[in-house]
Length: 238
Image 1 (cartoon, rainbow, N blue to C red):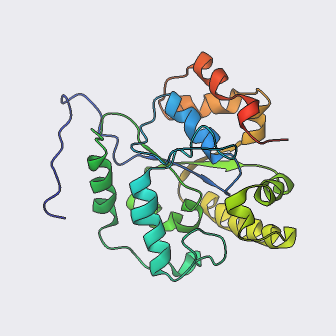
Image 2: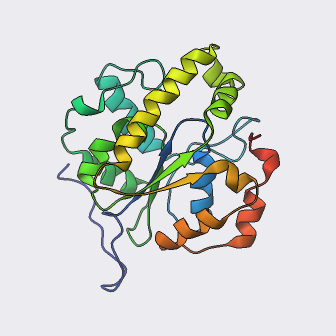
Image 3: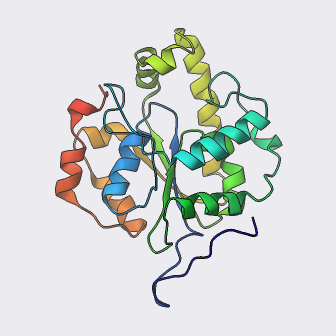
């Protein structure tokens, strides 16, 4: 990685945000896209993201393509577990270090045009499975854990085409949820800075916790844009 492009701040007074990213994680179908999209509206930089489409995620997934495909999925593949984070999961206590992870991440951000002068955000539910690797590289990161009731996650999985392909057994999904929650609890007990937010509250129109998180992250609150974005019609919450 010695040939990585160099970067410079626009002026000496601007802050370099590379070392303090925002990581949005939680269970798939819990509302991570909702929260990541809201934080983007308030000024978080996401780079080139996976597009949305169809009824299951019409406004987008808000996941950086390079970080998801070239880093997270490849790490999971190298560990010989499911790259989708469903059928088989890695053990947190046995995650081997990834040599050059920081430089790989920086390479992806630079290729997407990041200039280091605004907070950058990476949202991926699979961060729940790999967070020790990222915490080691980014001890100053702020982790935003998105929650949703278990029964509603199960219902969403059973009604989402790409999740339903994995299983149509509610018991499978309940066990899977428990595995993810165990890893999220371990993150909260680690030496990290994290916030927890319940996505259904946002859909119900209560933006109080979201506003607190935005201010904590140094983002700019845009009430009108957020109210337009958080349209219950587009989010499958009950």
